Length: 176
Image (cartoon, rainbow, N blue to C red; front, side, top):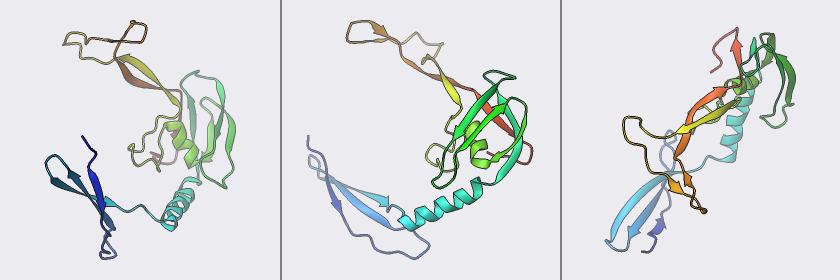
């Protein structure tokens, strides 16, 4: 079966409030059905730079709060974060339960949140690790496992939960 042919039409400029769209027609050769898919145009470099500049202005502000070390309570750890160009890397040894003034992007990183990660719902699970478990409903019989190249059964596994290593509790406002 052949891949459907894509036909790209030039987009017509809409009003300034609407985004530009590109139409792609996919033709299935076996049935001759035409499917029109509208795709938004990628943002221009200027728009992307303006968005990054706005994020940098917002996330370089200092926030005060308590550092939490869930992995080794009472312990200390070195935190190093580099997120934006031309912004110095955040590098500090932090002790569990102590108060610190740190940039907002570092606090969000410790809590596993990223404002620029729109596709993942702004939750990126930094400073945490996955706990794997079997991926099946206990009320049903266990699913069959597959075999690898040596003929050894491999169970169906998936991420059961995320265990946090570090966190930052803001004393000013919600940082999420």
